[in-house]
Amino acid sequence: MTDEMIPAWVDGTLQPVEKLEVHRRGLRHKAVSVFVMDGQNVLLQRRAREKYHSGGLWANTCCTHPRWNESAADCAVRRLREELGITGLWPAHRDRVEYRADVGGGMVEHEVVDIFLAMAGSKIKVEPDPAEVSQVEWVGFYDLAAEVRRRPERFTPWLRIYLEEHSKRIFGTLVRP
Image 1: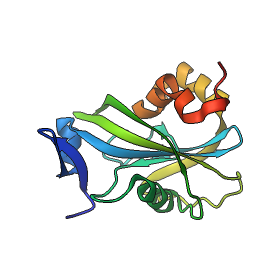
Image 2: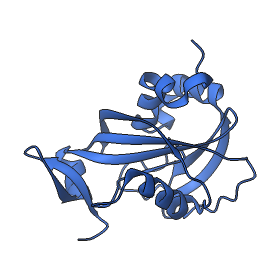
Image 3: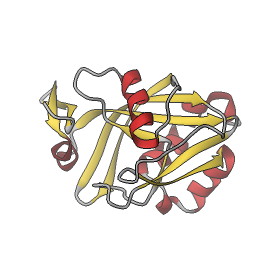
C-alpha cells in the first residue's frame, strides 16, 4: 500500500483508496488539520502552486490525510514535520468536523477531519517543503477572520468553512461571543 492510499468510505466500508480517485469521486474520507498558534496569532501556509488542488491558496498551518492504520495524532505530528519542518510540538485534539466542498478541477473534498491545535512561539523553526508550501505567515486570528470575509477567494474552502462554521469549536475562548 502506498502513501497515496487514504482511508475512505466506499459503500459504507472504510477502505484504502488512491488519493486522486477519492477527490475525483468526492468520497467521504479521513483527514487531519492542524493550527499552530502563538497567543492569538495563527501560522498560515500558502499552498504550493503545483499542488493537485487549491494551489496558491492560503490554508491553516497544515492539513493532510492519515495513512491507513495511522492515528490522527501521529498524522498531525508527521505532517508538521514533512510540510513545515516543525518538530517538538504535540498538537492537542480539538474536535472532529465533517464538510464537503468543491476544490476545483473536478475534485471534491468530503472530509471527516480531526482538528488539532498546538501552541508555539513565533520564533519556532519553520522550514517549509517547497513542493508543499510556497509561503508561511503569522496572522492575528481576528485579522484572518476579517480577511477571509473580505477576500474569500484567497483562502482554501476548508479554512473558510473552519472559520465560518466551526471557530468556537476549534479556537474556544479566542472567539468572541
